[in-house]
Amino acid sequence: MDARVPHDQAEPRHRRHRRRWARLAAVTAVVIGLCVAVPAAASAATPTTRTDFVTGAEYAATSTRGSFAGPAIGQFPGTFDAKVDHTPLVADSATITGGTFTVNSRPGVRGTVTGGSIEPRSAPPGCADHELRVRGTLAITAPAAGTGSFDVVETHVQRIVLGQCRIVFATIVGTLVVRY
Image (cartoon, rainbow, N blue to C red):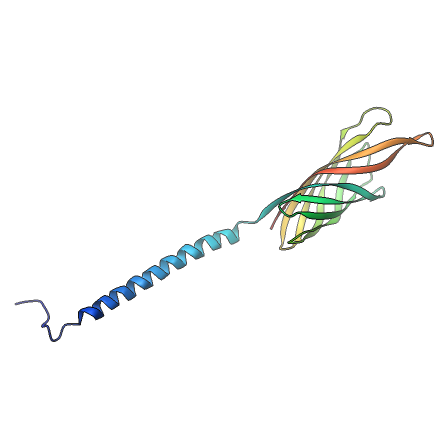
């Protein structure tokens, strides 16, 4: 007995090919969809990390707050403004207690300073310039929630004014890293 279907009852060849191509197209669509979705999901889970070089000047200072501004150069170029709150300096050391920062770039970056430290880096004798190492942690609020850090050297430029050694201005140079 022949297992073949009689010619008049068999499905036409063009329909069989059409069904095969339809299945192939469906499988291809699923594979392409997975190829697009899996990397997108992986990149969504991987935070964006950006680093900028910052340099600037301290434009206002009290015993417990330093305010800095200047250019940010790197992966989100623009200008930055930071206000860093800290305990009073004792032997050029302090604990960072809070503050705010903004990088005016595209996308703009904003957040709060959550902690850190200020430590002496160099303190030459006499009325010479001295350096502080300022390191802090950040909570990023825009363009998306995230974290970050900064690591800068603050240079206090000192001069004798009216017979006393005084800080006449301060500069900073370092890096800013954000992850969101």
